[in-house]
Length: 155
Image 1 (cartoon, rainbow, N blue to C red):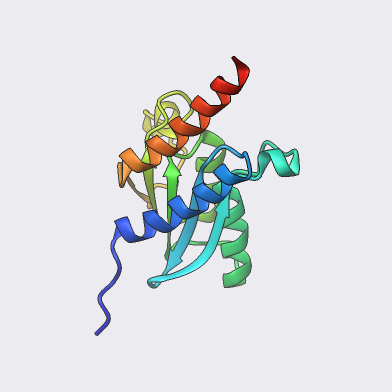
Image 2: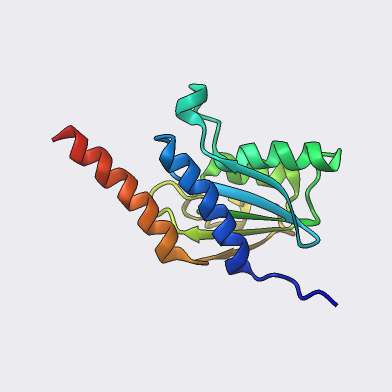
């Protein structure tokens, strides 16, 4: 019987998506969605390219996964994303009913956990399992490198 792949494997695939974003001068966040050990969707930030602040990696992946499955509910899926989702993406995750969210680096300023510390303000679906910190050093390093290069260009 085939052994299920682990969270680190899938996060590395999300990191590859983040690297694509980095190479396109987008904030390097990548996401994949997995169902039954199969990658069914991929996405990375496209905000600059599309001139759209809602074109986050998670949003791209949600749309692709829903198209793949032919439905809007992703309760049997896991979202892997390199950066803790923002409140907008967490809200979208709520509506998709994604079964699990696994993120790499925490986002102390804009991450959804900061905004949903009370049950009445919960931004993800109550049945969604959330795990953070998977390959957090690699995920953080890519984002830090991106913004360091931006600051260097300004000087």
